[in-house]
Image (cartoon, rainbow, N blue to C red; front, top):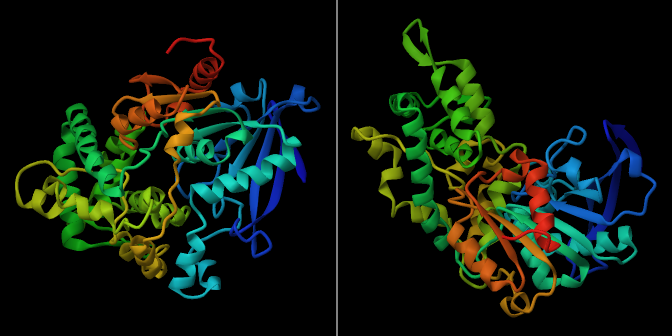
Length: 433
């Protein structure tokens, strides 16, 4: 173990060996990384543990600088484990460079089938017993981390002292088609709100998409397309995302020798914002997190988009209406334009066609839940459907909700100590809904 300090914190890097397949504990193993964080003044104390489950899928735990955001509140009373879920961060990586070591696409897809919430929770349980001496811990799940926490309640509630969920209550039984059928209207509302705030962006967005459609520029091997440009709308689900998008668009063009052209700075910013080089599992596993039972996900976001033709870039450019940005969705074309994903296209196809995903949520066990649970549900959350979330909340015995329009999906980060304070008060019965 390697320990070091940041302002207000003592950090310790921890590594754990776990089975790739928990049903074969004597088989192949992988490594899971977690960063322990404890307040400097409490480093020697026997504190309860809190495990943080990051959103995603495919993102390592957030890298904090000192006691920023919610972490400062957490270390007042917890020893925190910032967990890099399998395949992310410093845990055994899964990307275009490492996956070919598994073999061909069939072997790669089989390997990645062990990278969902069920395996992540089993990792947590092995790690918990090694850290706490068997005592239960508190889980804080953001977004997809909340999906993992709900599976935790289904599969191993004995390992949990309490559960805190922020923007991450999944539907217990919705197919991926249902998820995206609910998502596209929410995204359209967010885009309309952005254009109402920044009406000058309507013409700018159309001009950028038209330029990309005509010229198809490349940046660092990444093909820049109208569809890729539309995907920048994913930021509209965060607290300052609309402003970020506006500032990106306002300096898109420069006057070149042959007339207006997209600046190098814009092209590089777009490439950086749309590249999956740092989180390829997000693209590979995003729809798989909704897979339960024999029905394949089958590129649900792409198929369902056909039901919402207003999102078609070519159609928008052929008419005079606004170009709609898109949100949190993965499409086959992602694996054509992004050099970090191109070698994994066939693997992605096999995952999309998979028909043996285990069921993730046990409705009967959740209905009999005895673990204190509190969830922040963000009103009109662009990433997680509020209706789905509230139905799930009503299906988990004892879960207390805080429904708020004060924050977007990133409330636990943007709201800092306040969000965590509210959830801890709810699970302890110190606050009303």
